Amino acid sequence: MSIHLARALEKLKQGILSVAGQVEIRVHDAVRSVQQRDRSLARTVVESDNDIDQQEVDVEEECLEVLALHQPVADQLRFVVAILKINNDLERIADLAVNIAQRAISLSELPMVEIPFDLEGIFLQANDMLKRSIDAMVQMDSPGARQVRGLDDSVDLMTAHAFQAVEDGIRANIGSLSQLIQYLSCARHLERIADLATNIAEDVIYLVDGEIVRHKPDSH
Image 1 (spheres, rainbow, N blue to C red):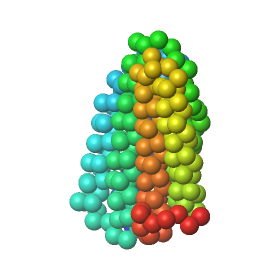
Image 2 (cartoon, rainbow, N blue to C red):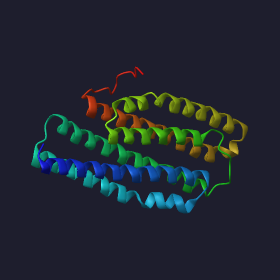
Image 3 (tube, rainbow, N blue to C red):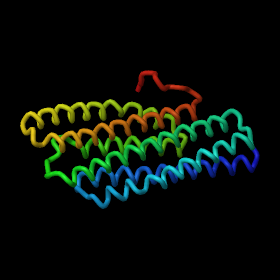
Image 4 (cartoon, rainbow, N blue to C red):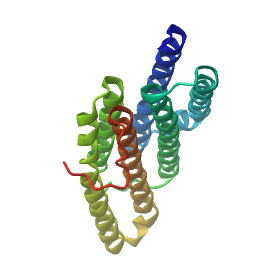
């Protein structure tokens, strides 16, 4: 590998890590804005979306530049392809954080209703999956990425419980319908974040092992 290509790949790695770090912060702040009915924090998440979008575009342009100027092959080509896909998934996660923050803004205008399910638990699991998938990318850790794939079912189960809890809550108090639907929407967005974290982990497996595991059942 040439020195110029090595430097370009390292720049890509640092760029995607910067995006990942910012996205993690946005998800954390979005959920906190719901839990704390913090309209100001929610607006900060929404208003920061353009910054994430620009970072995503910058990383994509750098990937395309590497492909055009250096024509990487084998492992280096897999790295660039994986970064392109991970970059896109991170931008989608940032959009979901904005959606959660928008729910917080709506909830702040409604009477307080207790969250009838474990939103914190869903957040912690989805966030853990996101952190693990990014760590696996940094460390080129295929076993760690494969572990992330095995965590998705627990988020799905917690979200199913959220559906039932919201249904029961609406039956008990139809006046809380708007708030409960907003909370359920937050849970669904977090479930999608967990799905995208799984996508990132699968891209890491492709990056390290050259194996495409998407759409294959988890064997761990």
